[in-house]
Image 1 (cartoon, one colour):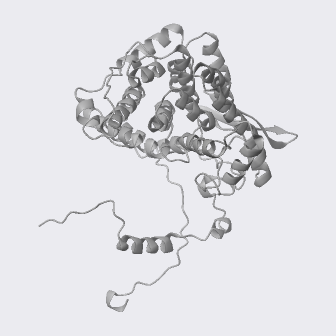
Image 2: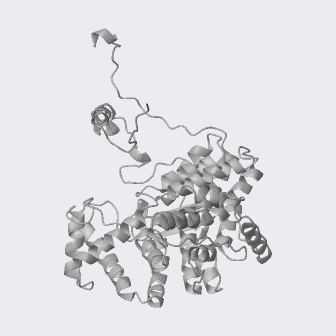
Image 3: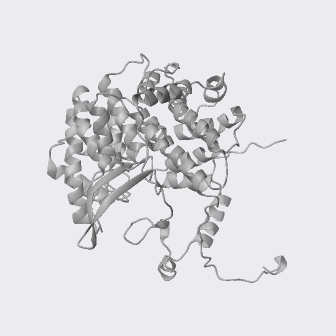
Length: 455
């Protein structure tokens, strides 16, 4: 007779073995200095160790003055074009820009009107899932974690592709374009299944519209009545563009390069990058910002009281409030110091959206925290560079105003970053023929084998 097993239970045996794992895996931190190891591939000042070259994007947070590298206002370039100029271009024309910027990142140049129309039509035509995919894959096994749902869906698409393992450039481009088109649909459908089966809400499965943009389709698919305002679509489109790409050194894009270098298929590569993005230190950071503000609202009733807000923020830093991690989420960045250009751009549109939605009080709360937090962090912590709001500080608030459920925050990030990952995958395939394999120095002392009877 079979015995049922609770696969989620942590038994005493597991705890015993965990102690063994702790003991055998712990490495003396001093050894990293002894052997000059760049832990986390970072220098002591926090800068990333140069591990590759890329033509796709550039993150710039310093400049050389009198022979010294000093912090400057952050800049982000896509294929050599300043993102702020890109945004100004399509905003001034009063149009959406996701498809145009996707073209730029994938093909290295801005499209003409005809090229943009043809490319948008190509992406629109790829938004159709295989027959019965929604019923058999998404609805039959809904998950409470949308990133896992998304990864499973992408890996399952492998089975529907007759050329899944073909890593020639034309085929990989075809796969990437299909995934760029389908990930928004898979994300929303995964959430709808979760919302229905786990929360008991009505099930809405709208068909994507080939003539709508990526941002418009997300709102169209998500909302029961499929309605949205032009400003809502414009700001979601902007958020997607600012999350598309961030240099080859960010965790998930570096994952794309590493996994692609092994020669694996596109679906496996993208699933690996999704697993990286899921982490709260990467793509899940804006959820932490939202939850921190929810906790702040419970403890500070006057949102314009600088003294009360400062006291709460200091308590967070001292591990006395919120999640006791000692972090003010949405503040600071691994590269940027004086400012995050993505936060600057998003911040300029947040106020307009908050006015349209009647949530200006919350906007002013965010503005107050953005003003106070850098000062408090500078007073409380020894930091080697400045601290400023990062893109996660505003993106979660924007998604919340747009009515996007928290469960979709990180998948929306993945919708955008799928473009960057696609560009990095093709760049790796074109330029490198060797598997990426960094060196690790073994520091475990040698020991002799002992026979079982003598242990």
